Image (cartoon, rainbow, N blue to C red; front, side):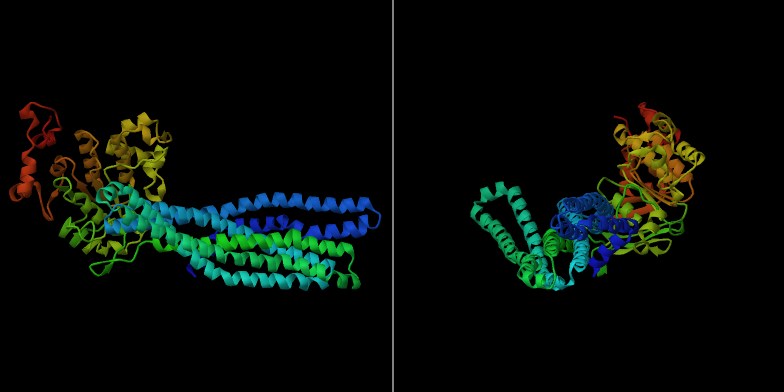
Length: 601
């Protein structure tokens, strides 16, 4: 039922293209009606009556019908493309979103091989959907043209055509469920064989070293044999398609020929008999053959591919960690969400998170409250879990235990759009796309647009005015490959500054900036309305913050700089590696940072 709704929805969402498709189908089906009539009249009223000009005129009419059909076929293909390409894009979004859901909820790297396999299924579904639309529509219009044409010639021959056609369609329909089951098994077998072969190739050295060639050969051979057996069974079943075509497409010709003496006695002319055979042989039989081939192969593939996509690409997947269903929203380079939810405090209550079910927790039983307007710096050694805390706070990762609340609302209950407007996260690798500078800066802004004066204010505050001028202004096209990492970070920071989100998370988002540029950007966000959380790349970020969260293993300490100096040995150790650059005579730093500037090489 879900697949049927998906396919019908894909067609229904494009009503203009659907109307265009059916309109041009009439033109494409013109020979289905005209051909038999033209042959019958050309023979009876033209050549047999000694009027060759009239006979040629009817044949020219048939040629004109075929020319019209060629034009209609081209337009039909364009209309089908306008329906199936958005369908393909929707399936790809589904696959990517599902992959990100599973990756975010498990904390594991996305399975690129699985994504590639699902991408192949998407392309298969797109091509199969297009083929099913094309052949089904062609069959319906062709049969309608044949029925009308035969009725206008002689209604006595219609049962000879329709009865075998119905029988052939019934036989074909009865074989479809078994075909679908075998096609599904074949796809799974193909994936199993591919996986076995890939594992064998990756482990060739170990296999040889352990002398396990025979064992591995037997295991892979079983997968290959299984796939071959299913393929043979499917091939045997496809013989039913040939039988269906013989019954529905060729048997009517035989019946008409056998019944010719009786039809002639009832007044049928040679032209009527030949026109009827033309209808069957030239229109009905090819249309039925296309339907049997198209639905029997592409229709079955379409259903199976969609089942695979919906089953493995859907998000969030059902899973449990701590007895709860795990859900996740996709991570992006920059995210922003609902002013209502983000304007209230961020709370983490008993949050525990590990990358994998058997891994040691990166964060364990963390309790943290960040009130509205706070400025928090998160510090600690590399790999200690600082970015994990940011991802948990942003709702990108889901904890195994505990809760993350934005404004008292569980983050998992916020929809993607609400979450997007509530907070903005800028990671270390800033995302800049090819487009104008205005588009890059303003696409998180309210309504996706910002006036020049608003852009000017943000650009000046964050410190990218010089870069904006060098790029050529807001309407200049940005080529990400021509920007340095620091320049991309400045653009991403300005974009976050312009977003409506009142919770800003900077996950080492200034690591490619010099200390002065970093200080200016952080001070701009601190002065901006809302809450700021900085995953510190330099300890100067801790000195600018109101409070500091020190990550120390799975433990965490929270307080002011002075409180952390007094109570956290790790924080004292980190700060102890710094010295006054003025006393050392090494380098110049902003005066407010000089007592804790990083030692120059």
